[in-house]
Structure formats: C-alpha cells, structure tokens
Figure (cartoon, rainbow over the protein chains, first blue to last red):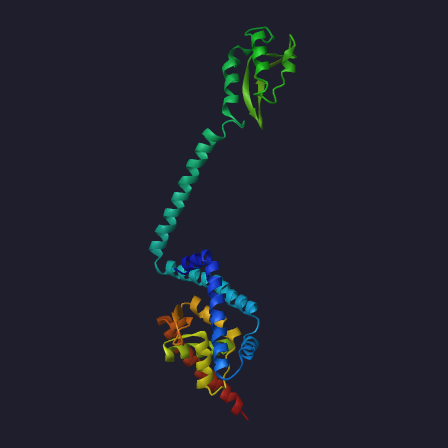
Length: 203
Length: 108
C-alpha cells in the first residue's frame, strides 16, 4: 500500500508542495499573531517570527527531502516485508514463481517461433519485394544449355531495379554472362536479395 | 541497545505532545513543549516540520486541515495506532537512555 500511496503522491507533487508552503506560512502567521499579542508592533512581530523561522525555502526543501528520502526508505521496507511474506508461505511462493516462469517461458517461445517464421523470414524492408523474383525465377534464365537471360526477363528486372535496391542489373545486361547459371535461387543477404547460382560452370 | 540520537528525543516529544493533546498543529506542538517544559525545551521549526512529515510518511501520525480556535486554518496532526505503539516503545527506550547517561555521570 505504501508504494501505491507514494505513486499517488508523485502525481500530487505540486499539490503537496503547496500544502507544505501553506502549512509553514500558517505557522509563521500564528507566531506573528502571538508576537503582536505580546505587545510587539506588526513589523517587529514579523521580523522576530522570520528570524526564528529561518529561510522558508530551505525549510520547505528539508521537509520535501524528508518525504522523498523516506519514500525510498520505506520502499526497501516493503521489499523486505514481501520477502518475509514469501518465506512464510513457501508453497504459495513456489506456485507463484512457477506460474510466472511458465507464462514468461511460453510467451518467449511463441514469440520466437512467430519471429523466426513470419517476422524475420526475409531481411528486406517489405516482403513483396521478394515475391516477384520468386515468381519470375522459373523463367528468368533460359532452361537448358543457354547462358543467356531472356530479354523479357531482363526488362522486368530493369523495371524492378528500384524494388531491388542492390540489384546490379548491369551484370546481367550483356548478351552473355560470365557464369553459366543452370538454375538460381533467391538468397536473403544482410539487407538485400542475392541471386545465388546453384551450379556454377566456367563459361 | 537504546537508540539515543537527538532525533529520537524530538520524535518522542512530538509523540507525547500529540498523545496529551489529541490533535494539534505544528505551532501548537512547539508552544505546548515550550510551556510544559517551562521554556527549558525550545523546538526549532526547522527540525519540527521535517520530523512531522517523516512521522506521517511512516504512518505514525496522520494529518488533516482544520480550523483553529482563532478560526485560522491549520494542518492538525493526530497519532495513529502504530504511532501509539511507537510512543510506548520510544518512552521505554528513553528511560533506558536516561538511566545509561545517569550511570555515566555518576561514575567516579
């Protein structure tokens, strides 16, 4: 309950500050009134009260510090109390820890699975960047013995250059390419897609 | 072992004053201690208010705004049940401190 009260107090900080100010101000006024009742003039009474009271700002800060210091202090006390409570009922503690452990563990496992399957499957900003090439890869290269890229594929690749930021179309622009690719597959590389030849034969 | 710092003494005076008066504001506490001790004890405001707030945070006293007999508003402090238990413990503790100090003073 202590923690809850302190959290509330945190929100009411300015209200609390004003209350402390009011309280100190009222105190000073009462002193001044008593001084006047004792026969002092109003200036004398105020001066005497101020002298006795000291610097009101410093005092307010000290009262404030008392509240804050104790906040931390009693937080430790709450923690100690909780620990004692746990030690007193080990069965409850065990069930609570086990429940938390299983809950957190299951959560992590499920997240890791989804992360691996759905979120991180391709390290590209948008998944659709990859899909056209997947679709075209079947007829990107002429099947069989030829090493030439089909002109239609080349056009498509050129048109999609902006999508494949790191795509080096120039290497494919020639009528023949250095390496003879019998088939290729898409490989995600750090931040881009690469075409990796499955079989490389020197042309 | 008795806890015997000055702060303990101030707390004890505040506790006892509140248990005697029931409910009082800071100024009233200062005046009461001065009057009852024949002005031997003089509580400084600079120590009183931090102490009051510390005791309130500890749950030993609680406060509420009310109007004084001279129809001025003031924050009145009252002992809580925990505060009354504290008072009993502190009083006992104080007696031990006094006994200890007396023993030292009388040692020859």
